[in-house]
Length: 97
Figure (cartoon, one colour):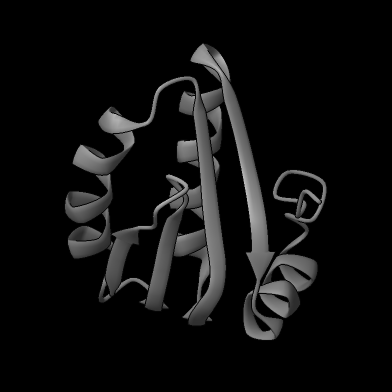
């Protein structure tokens, strides 16, 4: 899992958000979240695999962000979209325009 902040401040996730990578992803994303002031925007267009642990991480980020500001997903890969729909997370993790 690779996580980078682009020039607009969006966090771009690339790779797999699965149970085998979740600890590494969490440790990489946590310091970047601290840098985001009042708005967290995630780009999931380059995430090629996600499981329930990855969805739970996204939900935890969403809950934390919304307690202090705004959370948005600006792009989502077809693989992630399918997992979100199959898991019932679509109302929780909808993509913002």
